[in-house]
Image (cartoon, rainbow, N blue to C red):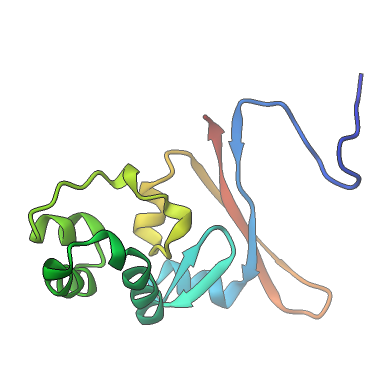
Length: 138
């Protein structure tokens, strides 16, 4: 028996995980090269802007007297783990919801233990595009 919950939306009660992002081929290349970072599954910022956004988002969670050191290490390493370690505060990467922050390509995939995929195509205007994401069992 098939029940339609939302018109035009494919839904499943599967226990697997699916993700699909679509962007220009240029943005996909920049993401993979570390020039832009991603938030969620479709919001991109240049690396420097993403780092500053992340620092602004996490600022209230870092003791004020340690934030300068945290910021310095995070800007240098792009790693929350290393920045927390530098200020001698325990950090578990799973305490940070990855969808709240911009992530570089390496960190993005650290949060996902699934199969990744990508498929290139050209849109109706002739723009090279890439559909990409991950899938697997939750």
